[in-house]
Image 1 (cartoon, rainbow, N blue to C red):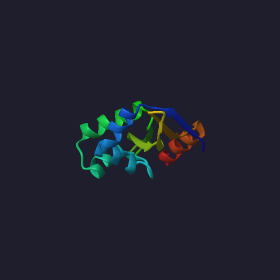
Image 2 (cartoon, rainbow, N blue to C red; image 1 turned 60 degrees about the vertical axis):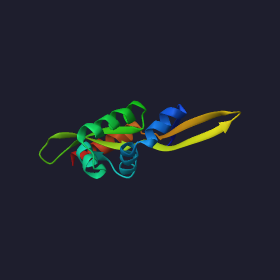
Image 3 (cartoon, rainbow, N blue to C red; image 1 turned 45 degrees about the horizontal axis):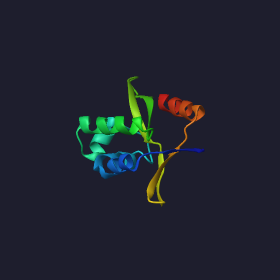
Image 4 (tube, rainbow, N blue to C red; image 1 turned 90 degrees about the vertical axis):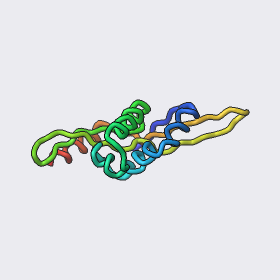
Amino acid sequence: MGEDSEEVGVDTVGELLEDEYTRSILAETSNESLSAQELVDRCDASPPTIYRRINRLQELEMLDEDQRLDPDGHHYREFSARLDRVTIELRDGTYDVSVHRKETDAVERFTNLYEGLR
């Protein structure tokens, strides 16, 4: 799997990583995909708090979303971290911040969807 990187403002990254719920969401979804309710439980936060953080992370392409089916045939969403690492460099008096993301390709997304149907 390759990786994608992008320059992002130091303030944006600082604000994100300063927030305990955002850090928790990224940490919890770095090893496994989780539903919003699972994130509410694991992060000990309210649903609106979790959904606000999810939306912000998705805007910055740091969190992926997949559809899943439960055994009763109901659809629900699961989230997984795309964030791989953040690098901050100080050069000539300015900060360069790069966000490195894990790439997801169509085959991987299809496999995840198929496994969710079983």
